[in-house]
Amino acid sequence: MLLVGPGSAQEYQPYPEARITISQWRSYFEQVKSKFGDTETHPSANLVEFSGSDTFYIFTEPGHPAHPAWVTQQIVKMDNGLGMRQIGFFAGEEQAFATLFRTYRGRIDKVKEDMKRRSQQPQPFPPAENDRK
Image (spheres, rainbow, N blue to C red):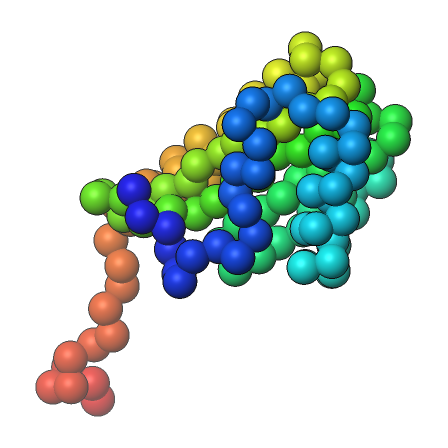
């Protein structure tokens, strides 16, 4: 797999293990926040999302069962087109984190299905020059 674009300036896997400390969570959250600034908040889900050109960072907020945790999804170029990879880290309850991770993994599967379905649909072609009236 190759990353799309010139590479990610924000480290995709900042820690070797999924279980991290609260201070590691805070540090990475601040790095991502200072780099990307603009966020998409999901208050009812206690989540905040930062987006780069090819990477999405979904952080939990207080009140989320997995807090503190985050999931990173990254678009990658693969032999058969584009795909996504996912990684996550947690300093809270592992079971709640696993649920969050699976939820976003399902989002990747849905995007892949949508992309596959679209690529299989015949695309309308404009009429040939001699067919136009």
